[in-house]
Length: 458
Ligand SMILES: *Cc1c(COP(=O)(O)O)cnc(C)c1O
Image (cartoon, rainbow, N blue to C red; front, side, top):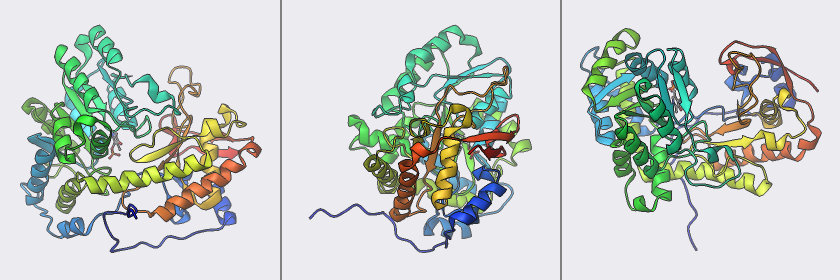
């Protein structure tokens, strides 16, 4: 008989987690103003709020931590990290930063100015923030099929080349660079194909523009290229990474995702002028160039993490688990952004809580119900996260309303995944009786989802 699939690692250290009662959870939720960001992690049984910095390090990474060189300047750990990044990406210039948004802040300080236009595929929220705070504009050129959650397509994270070309031809002098997010987080962890990256490169060259990859989940993207693009089915993940990055001029990286560390990030580029520009901002914002906000030991662990996570079996184990959750939801008939993404399942709350009006935030309501059901913490990626229109101050109901179930790397077992799916099924089975959502009692002007206070309407 064929052997079943199993993880490409075994467990050496565990962290106890605790279940709770529905009564406890209802009380905690009330104290948290019905915002799961306000819960304490001890009040959560299975935590799917994010895959960022929540993964488990390997024994080799922990061992590397002990060898960290904490020298202020010229630390050995920096050179280990730099050499690993150069080997995987081909970029010779590397600047460490304390996380991904810091990499954006440093690099964009050198590159983005007022009135600029930065086209890309669903810019990540901090990326967009760092563009807009400089009074520049982020123009989304994601393919339209990304918005059809039930359509099965292999690369729903792609850049729409016609949209990109239109932006470039109309604003030639205002575009400092193009940014491509791999994988496309906002579209549901959907990958970008090598073919699409090549087309982006071609258009960029035509207009004399450079390309940055926002690379938080580049390894997962490489896995999807290997499994879905015929040309690469026999290539190694590391070969695919080299090929992907050969199509870019530089990258920003949140190492909290595919770097398999709890904190960290970096900028890497092939251009000396970008390196020189970013250096000027790294020192005041992050720290000296050979640590940029990171401990020596953290750079050492990141070097190992990048190496491990660009191996096929590590990625296969991960993506397999996300696909396992998707297969259970398929069995229960629960709609989500199809096909399963790399790091998360995006449950389509709009299609589930059809009796809850948009004005009462269906995805947030589903997030609350899921937590109450089993202590599973998801994250609303929907109408609350979308904030208000800066001009009209109206809520933005034009986008999608998801509950994101992000899966931390190497952290939960498939049994935990079964609990998540069963809890969601229980809520799904009583969806017709959920007719009221929540109302906002207090909100911040920007990024309101972290601190918003809500009240149930039922
Ligand atoms: C997480 C993330 C960032 C920001 O990185 P942080 O480490 O959270 O600061 C930027 N872009 C993408 C695509 C991300 O997923």
